[in-house]
Structures are given as structure tokens and as C-alpha cells.
Length: 89
View (cartoon, rainbow, N blue to C red):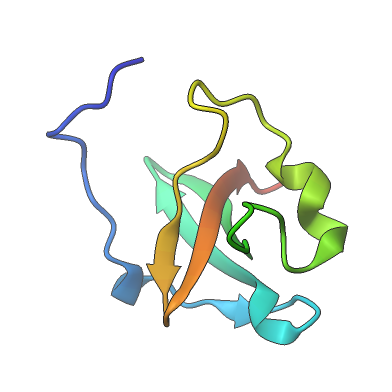
């Protein structure tokens, strides 16, 4: 799928994150809703080699990417990969 420049945007300021990693800021957990579907928003901090700072989350980053590495987003000066997954029923 091609990148859509007109895709809707969610401001980071609208997401309330809870620190859940080791160290605490290594993994952030938030909640978003898309079209009535509640989703976990997990932000996994990565180092300069794109490895998870909290090793317990490394497997979550092993998702095929066309470029070989996932894009990151800076949150409070640190780089994170964002993953959205639906809540259980």
C-alpha cells in the first residue's frame, strides 16, 4: 500500500501514555479508537541499531518491512516504533 498524504492524523498530545517497560520509559502503552474499534497503542523505544531498549519487546519488532527497518517517531527526545493492536473482545 502506498503512503497516503491525506490520511487522518492523531496528535501525540491526544494520546495518554503509561510507562510499562524496563526501564519504565522503554515501553509506553496508550489507547486509541479508530472507527469505534478500541486499540492498544504501544510505543517501543529503540536504540541506534533499531533494537528494543527493553529486550522483552524485541520479538514485537520482528515485522517484515520493505526497507528493512521500521520508521520511528520521537517522543520526549527518544525514538520509538509504534504498534497498534485491537483490544480483546
